[in-house]
Length: 615
Image 1: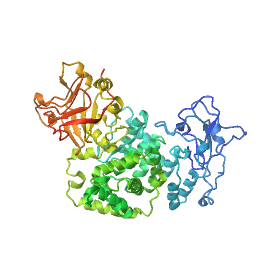
Image 2 (image 1 turned 180 degrees about the vertical axis):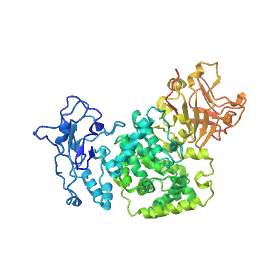
Image 3 (image 1 turned 45 degrees about the horizontal axis):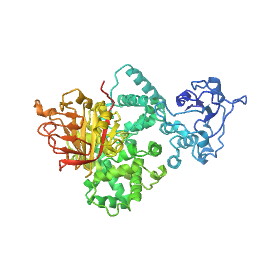
Image 4 (image 1 turned 60 degrees about the horizontal axis):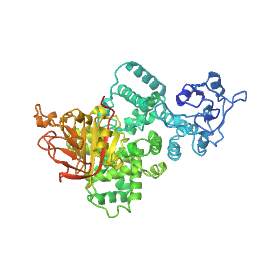
């Protein structure tokens, strides 16, 4: 519902909140302008809860809700002098109600709402009276759940500005102009630093998200690099229409310096800024990381924070992330730094004793441990928002100083690239939805792996087809579960904790259609390793105009054999049972042995597949 100039609420968006409801259920759920817990009756004293089966409110019923009402909750002291925007109330059928058609976040029942929590009318009053300090405190302290009814309007109200209506029309015009054209992925999704987490939007939601991002790119072509825009818009679509999400995003872009990092230099500088903030505000955590790595070199320590925004946007539970966004939409980048420091402080609190005598950790292992800590966060959302005395002016000054230092360095940004070529840089800094659940790889390495595969699969969530932990070590079981799917990713962890594997472009069922132990597959296949360092070994034919027969041997298998990579030797092979294997240099991928010992024992083996199946 949208607040009109006269303080009433219009009903244009009522049906937007109603996904479906049980027929014949007379029990109504109160949606009171998403303010307080009041049940309203019509002018004749009867219930005004009757609606059509599609969830639309009639004009006569809507009019019944436009008389002034008074909240039973004591108003904020700042509201007593201004009662022009008294909240209005509406009753909707109680059933399975969702905030939007793009996701399955349910609207919490009215009787579950904590009456002590702040209301939308209070927020509106603080905003209208320009009481910014009180509004900041209001957003930090009101711990609304992810399903609290206020969320149907909360983020829209925070982002609302005088250009809101005009921006809504802009979006409608853009969508109309693009109607009937082939969908195009926005260019900025291919830039370094992009996070691609959609929090389980449904299929309609994911398609709408791409449409929304395309419209944003069309409206603001000057913005070519916004790492958090994808997850930000995905979060918006959980609670509002795509039109409203566009309006909110345009509001943030109008104050881009406050809300959005826009250059690769800024991304690199932000890691150094976080390190400086950690050293100042959480010295014990800084000292622990320094001791674990065994180095006080800033360039080394900074690598722990290469993925710090992933901790927030891809690893934290959804209930925590929405609370972070409540504050971010008003306060800006400062909130992300505060939350990152809070995550590190809480990680230290939980891990300090366990890590007391540990040394020799790599910076990537520490980052992975922090990522895992975030994904199983035991502390409340409020704990993440409690850090104080971190002024935005100070953060901005430190950030600007770090950016200036980087600009004075080599134009190739050696610190950002860390001696990697541009392709590796792009791969390292892409983060995709972590719905791919692996017992072998942490989420940031899953993201790196996905960035190596063909781009047409980047927004497809891989499905686990096989695991020796769950399915045993039989080739018969392996083939029955994976042979019809392609492409597939093979992940292996040895008893020495070495991790490597292969991306296989062709379905393994092809082994049945060819003579015994014949090779098949395409040049999209590759081998990879994550220990001792991450590396991808692509087909040599991508770099050579002409290849020999021994340089195009990709996949080979029979009933008890699996081979990836041939020519001279086999790049990766497993025979008889899924207990042991071997790896050698092969001509097809020009790879070194994926483990120094060449022969290995398999501790864990997982196979993931994408959407295609053999006909």
